[in-house]
Image (cartoon, rainbow, N blue to C red; front, side):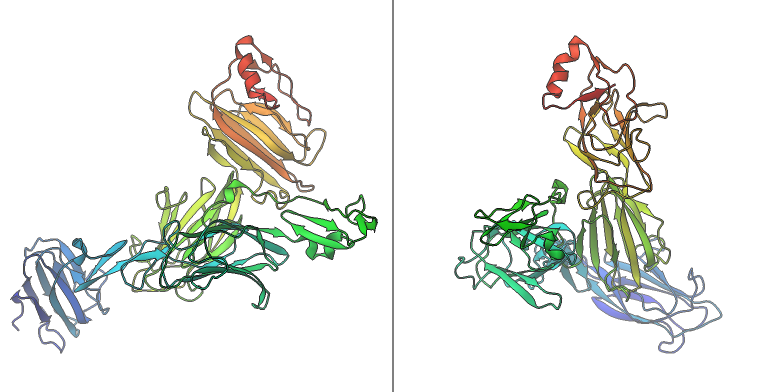
Amino acid sequence: VHCGGNFTADSGVIENPNYPYDYTPNSDCVWMITVPEEYQVAIIFTMFQLEQHEDCIYDFLEFRDGHDEDSPVIARLCGYSLPENIKSTTNKMRVRFVSDASVEKYGFSFSFIKEFDECKTTNHGCHHKCVNTLGSYRCECDIGYELHSDGKSCEDACGGYLKGENGSLTSPNFPNLYPNKKRCVWEIKAHSQYRIFLNFTHFDLEGVLTNCEYDYVKVTSVDAEGAVAKVHGQFCGRIAPQFLLTSETSHLRIKFVTDSSVQKSGFAAVYFTDRDECEVDNGGCEQICKNMIGSYVCECESGYVLSNDGHHCKEGEHDFAIVVTLLLCICDFYSWQGPSGGCKFELNTAFGQLTSPGYPEDYPNDKECVWHFVTTPGHRLQLDFIEFEIEPHQDCAYDRIDVYDGSSVDAPSLGTYCGPRAPEKILSSKNELYLFFHSDSSVQRKGFQAHYTSVCGGTIRAERTVGYVYSHATYGGSNYENRVACEWTLLAEDGMSVEIQFTNFELEEEVHCEYDYVEIYDGDSENAMRLGRYCGNKQPNLFISSGPVLRVRFRADDTVTAKGFVFEYVETDPVEGLIYTEEPGPTTRPPLEPVINEKANNRFLARTAAGRRPYVH
């Protein structure tokens, strides 16, 4: 049977010999396809069934990028699955069909057309990405954005569930103009006995506060059944609410609506959660309990005054309140962008879980998701996959998970994963981790389920700006746990020193510090000098290393726990002439005074002007 030939045309159809019946054995057919200059050859399959083999060595259909026998191979196909579309890089393509002497199948039928890459022009109009398709093109957006209704512009994906203890949110495109015809809803959910505090740091919407009918932000508290418990306000104009919004329940809803006309820069807001101490037993107050940020106050009704115990009331003329406690630590490390909805997540809790989109059902096609994990400074993030099933490929070219040791895809890679086998435990080197999930347009699988936890210790690079280390990831909210063993190695540049200063310190107290304690070492070797062991609630002094390394070790036994500690660290110039005559023993007492020569005295006094006592080896 005659087969093969030359095609010089804009389009055409090619089929195997004897089509639509089984192809003939021992075939070897070659077609040469040529389309006009400035175009490429595109192949679209309508039928495909060849003898199956892993390496396609029996019957196969081969496409080469050019007319020569040694032109680059685009694809070598066999089996029963309809192939994806194929495209050359030039206006020429060589197609070869080979069958052996045994098994025959239905064969193939495909069309070829001339194809032009519209994305190579400058007038495609795509805001972010242009993706060429056969006979056309489409626009796509970077992760965290969504395509506008015009099919070309990209805008921030908006709305979503915010479950972190602290976080932030902004209007789409902030600080640039927000888009028209937008409706975004953020749901902030805290633990049942907690309240949510919302503070607007920027506010610029169309309208005036007395008439918010065009663009507005509406804030409501929602009860356990999903009904509105309280409307806190509907806001617009250029003046942000001049007060801290406090939720009535543990669920706060923020709704942002824009019309079809005027655009402004929008809004930015931060939120944090705090336990409502008045929720249980009225906070122990005899009459009135008022929840505050990190605390609560007892107050008395008219005609009564508060007793010295801060809880009970007695008859009197002057009404006053006593702040009972202050528990909340609002720290700088909670000030980042919260999730903007869609498939972009900011996870800023010490531990939690995550799943692929749609889990436990199959994940969707053409999906891109990112998870940005941030935990407490001085701690690392460990990722454990409980279930893992992603489309397999030798190079994970189709569906995959990419993990990065930092805050974005620009950070060092910790691996690319796909297939049915779950990765081993993944551990970051710092307090941030970034995970990217991608699925293509074909095969779907169940996806993944993973847990993440915070792990103390690690190696930290000291810089000229002050950094902080916390004893445990939930510092300020709960005591450290039992059976803790943490070690931090602080590194400065060669020729420099590391300086640390404890700002908070509260461990189990014992005269010899045998139970819970912190040890400081001048260096990272086994023979490094121990500068002291500390416990109790007396704050250790300032330490400066003699070299570029300082090591901090924290141990806790299995009984009593306490609030923990915080220390700040910074790279500093070496201090000469400060020598300790002996190591201080394990105690809650301050260490021995250093011997200070005259040369170093001025610098020593300057460092301790704020009342800090140094311990320098």
